[in-house]
Amino acid sequence: MTAKMHSVILKDIGYREVLIKTPSTMKEVESLTALNLKWQRANVKTIGNGFLSGGHFPPSVFMKMAEQKDTVVGIYDDRVVSYYTVNSVIMDGVLANQRMKAEELKLKGLMPKQASIAVGVQIVVDKQYQGSKLAKFMLDCLVENTKDRFDYFYTSISKKNEKSVEAHKKTGWMFVDQDENLHHLIYDLGKHTNAVNSL
Ligand SMILES: CC(C)(COP(=O)(O)OP(=O)(O)OC[C@H]1O[C@@H](n2cnc3c(N)ncnc32)[C@H](O)[C@@H]1OP(=O)(O)O)[C@@H](O)C(=O)NCCC(=O)NCCS
Figure (cartoon, protein in one colour):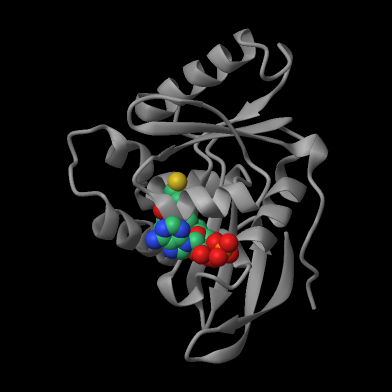
């Protein structure tokens, strides 16, 4: 586990130092679950579309994700204020669909046949901390933490989530496919360059 301080400038608050833990540990499970739920409650209006079950994780799943070193967290004042995760724990539901989509993208020649692909890639930055470059710094840490296991990340983003679309464009994700509701994105870990320095 590594722990690095990362300085951010927040609107209306000013300078803060956020502790970035890579990967997360059992200690953060409760606070991590709370941030995940806060985002899901604020943004997902319908439970029936299959998205909530793919995006919302209970503490038991975050515990396994900590054991499997899937998650990077940002902590301020003992509270998780941001996280970036892959998911190597859940094998069914939306994540099974993501694995199928990733294989389809290989067949289309967008990734090599033998590539190992992480799915369930999810980023959440709490409102106060958005716009602070925390997203990019956590991506640096997530890549560092998972590049021994994966060659590519795959994720999908709702076309309605304009902020997330812009944030992913800025951080080097490739928009390779789309359907009625979703953009499909891949990230080549082999091409990653660290863009933000820690303290
Ligand atoms: C997605 C998320 C992690 C991005 O983090 P962030 O700190 O806001 O990202 P950034 O500030 O680096 O980038 C956001 C970009 O979107 C732009 N943006 C902000 N509001 C926007 C809006 N309503 N519509 C379009 N673009 C918008 C910003 O201007 C910024 O681009 P710029 O730097 O070129 O000006 C964060 O918004 C978040 O946690 N959202 C809730 C959870 C979520 O939706 N996660 C993604 C699931 S796919």
